[in-house]
Structures are given as structure tokens and as C-alpha cells.
Image (cartoon, rainbow, N blue to C red; front, side, top):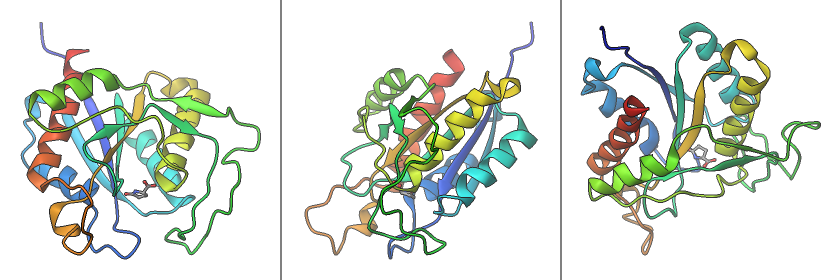
Length: 210
Ligand code: PCA
């Protein structure tokens, strides 16, 4: 019987908060350049760090590409390792602006939405598989309250509400700074581009076993 191949849509972010690079998109680009098509189809897109545009652009791509899995990746500067997120909360609040100049002072993402939505990705298995490659990883129980959390919340909410797409499994993975980003930030953890790319590859590998 012919092996069924999976269709993955993965997103990274543009640089933000005075950085010139975002490891999420850099690692996904590298991963897609070396992607073995026998593992399925991988599409990578780069999203603006915007509360409003990021979910809108991603939902347009989901409708076009009809993936089996949607994995959003973002930078979380203080993290020690690769951290798949368990939950998105219905809240946005940050001192820094988004790419449109908007500052979320503390407000619900959806006025009448659930307080929280869980990932539908196999995150424990992903963490185990990343650690097998000797790359630090753990489950995170907070995606923060900035754009990454909003993207995860909006897309999980949209998938839930659109029955035609409800088979899609989706969730967020935060990655640490690249070593080149912490040269002037003493004490902050980092990983190399190679480690982050390998870590994401290990996370994606789990999807083929489901
Ligand atoms: N990280 C931010 C937004 C974009 C990114 O890469 C976050 O954690 O919300």
C-alpha cells in the first residue's frame, strides 16, 4: 500500500524588539532546504509580528494549503531549550509594540472566547524526541501574552469553529536566542542555528509516527 504522506505548514516570525534576526524563521528555512520529501510536504512561511496580521495571513494559508499539521514557531529569548507550548490564553498584554505600532495594554483576544485553548500537537513526544538528539527541550505552560500567544489562540479557536478544518492539529513551539544574538546579553541562554534546526526536525519527526 502506498504510504500516506503528511502535509505540514510551519510558520516563523520576522525579527522584533530591536533584533535583526529571528531564529524561528532562520531554523525553519534551513529545515525546509534540507527536508526529505519522503517525510511529507513541508511549507514554511514568515509572519509579521502583528496581533492582527499574523493570524489572518496564516488562516488564509491554511485555507489554501489544507495542511494536516500547523506548527507556529517563535523566539522566546530567555528560554533554555526548545519549548512546545501546552496552552494559549485569551489575553494580550505587553510593554512592547507589535509591528503595526500597537501596544496591548491588557485585553481579551476574543471577548466571548474560552479562557484557554490547549495545543493539539503531541508535545510530550516531541520533547522526548528532541532530547534524544541531546538538545534541551521541555513543555512550557505559558506562551506569554504577546503576539505568539495571540497567534496560537486565534488559530486554535478558528480550527475549532470551522468544522471543515477540525482535523488539523496545531500548536506553538518557542525557541531560544541564537548564540549570535546574546553576544551583548550576558547570562542569557542560547542555542546554535544547527541545534534549533535539529530540534525542530526532531519535533516534526514525531508527526510521522502518529
Ligand atoms: N516571539 C514573540 C513574537 C514573535 C516571536 O518570535 C512572542 O513570543 O510572542
